[in-house]
Length: 103
Length: 285
Ligand code: SF4
Ligand code: SF4
Image 1 (cartoon, helix red, strand yellow):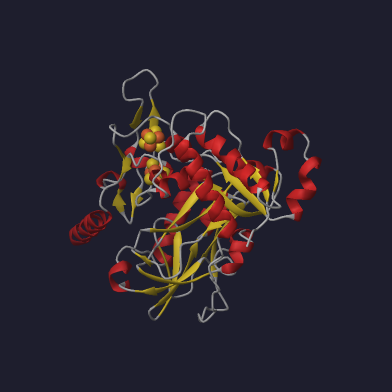
Image 2 (image 1 turned 60 degrees about the vertical axis):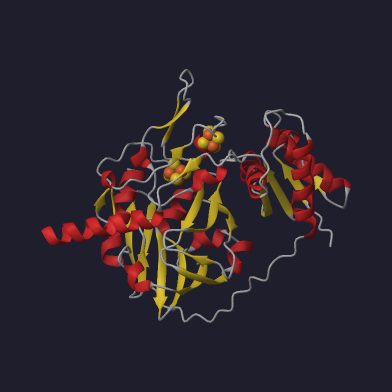
């Protein structure tokens, strides 16, 4: 699934994607820049920066598919972490309730 | 039991995990009837291996997430019967692979573990007892885009998560599968990795994956509960998911633990159909 374009207007369960904090966190103490995760993810979440000290960054966090954690399985060093799933679902439910009230 | 395979390793020489794929392939051929397909030679002279690749169950060994061996198998239209990924296995076994391209103690240990797993593993009995009272007549609403047709079931009891996985509910039981959007975006599905029967899964946790030459799709569970059955037919013939992911291409069944809660973050047909349309327009637009 190659959606390389930035989808700023996208939503998840009716909630604006920007309001949902879900994307991989790179632990730079563990990462050895093998770039397995970059090769794996088709959504252009990561960006490789050859000439910088941090050669890999999460460039487009909102491109990351909410609740996907697939790239972390390709990382042999466990350098990718994600927000708490339970907290994220609770947060989404809360925003939905608030918007329903305001309508 | 010593199984014999046609072994297709990626043989990648620029990564340690690729060298391990070669090591495992050699162990298999030295200690049994397995035969190796050389990926380099296969590319230029496919007749050399065509017979072997169809006579024995095909074992594909990928070193890393690039999945070169899997992609080669797809390119050559081979049926994959088993698959292993060295990087994943290293992780499962808590082995950190070295930077060196040569195999040292750790790498050889991993090769040995994988070899043993492949030669002794008995398949778990995943036989799905088809106890589920699934509707025989599924009605579909269709969204067409160019030459593609996307179906979504309209029957009551079907729900969808935003990750394009459907669930059909009867009482406290559920059947789960992917929607046409997933199946069409992946195109030819060649491998299904099931979750284990008996596993407890939370809503939005992954429960197995399917993959094509293009990508790997994690099946993100729309509901929480315990896995009670896996569709054995799609282990044998993953292409059933492409044919119809709602009927013969279903994935698994679960016993629900908290559907009232789960439902809050699910779509019914009415609200999923516009989501599907939007995704199709963005993706194929
Ligand atoms: S797979 Fe892990 S170690 Fe490799 S680049 Fe990604 S985060 Fe870093
Ligand atoms: S979690 Fe999934 S979508 Fe997000 S970066 Fe990883 S592979 Fe890509």
